[in-house]
Amino acid sequence: MSEEMQARRSERLSEYIRNNYSSPNEFIEIHNQNQGRISQLMNGKISFGEKAARKFEAMLGLPEGYFDREPSNVTVIEKQVRQVPLVSFVAAGAFENIRELDVDTYIPCPQNCSDKTFALRVEGLSMYDPNPYALKSFRPGEIIFCDPEVPAMNGSLVVVRLESESRATFKQINYDEWGNMFLSPLNPEWEEQVIEVNEPALIVGVVIGKHVSF
Image (cartoon, rainbow, N blue to C red; front, side, top):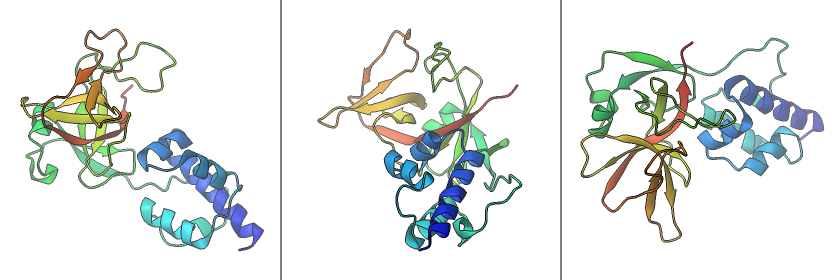
């Protein structure tokens, strides 16, 4: 592989992430990538071979050879916008197949997502962090996008339903060294800071982003 092709693929990956995500960290979190590897690929510090380029293209739904093309002088956002259903937390709690729900409202999801993705309108202040520098904070009324196809990792923001509840809830999920599940709010002033899950729980999906109306 020539140095020119290596530099081109690195530049194309950087351009794609810059145009489609708020930061490289968002790309890494959504697609469950290794932070160090993505950083090195973007900076041309490690080999960006043909196999890796084709794998990224397939993962992102891009045409084969996308990362081999000359970067354009015109910024074009390449992402495909998918219309996803806006449902209630009650409907999400009864989740089986999102495509079978009777939905009136569909909204565009700004993230790359699966066809099972749906949207919810945030309720309450448990996931609102008043710290102005907080990286993740959700006000009541904001719309979040939830993708059941994204695997839940330690620290992920999830929509989850406990067996004893009829509706889902939005929380951060954590596991201890024995695999026990805990749910936490993002609001440091919320009364119940750690909820130990002592019953069967269904992780409906992982929150991949939010939409804010101005």
